[in-house]
Length: 155
Image 1 (tube, helix red, strand yellow):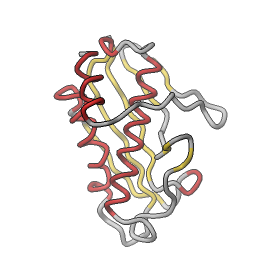
Image 2 (cartoon, helix red, strand yellow):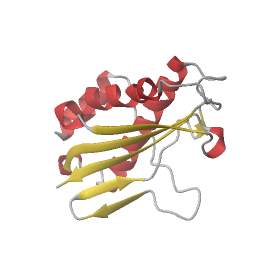
Image 3 (cartoon, helix red, strand yellow):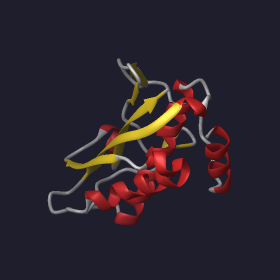
């Protein structure tokens, strides 16, 4: 599995960033039993927020999907750090919770979430198929358009 994930990332032209340190009084991830829960990840790229704003406002659906993909890349960086770099310990991606900063009339949060879901299935294969919630919210930290948390099974 480790070779497959690394090769799929390479084929997709993705280099995982270092896992971001917590920005406040929380931890980046928590183990409980055979589960690994990540804290919410923002669309950070090269250490800075890649975009700001709300879907249905200044952020297009396509940009929202790109933001969701960046969140997913950062989720994988957190998972890799939590696993000590050992992808063989990764079981299945169980669930994504996707928060989308949206104008009141925006109703395509599920399509924004596809930016993360499609990417994670591409990289993780069948173990990346997951349950999901996509929720519209009025605002997110730092005016981010998307924040995503993940729950993984671990071995």
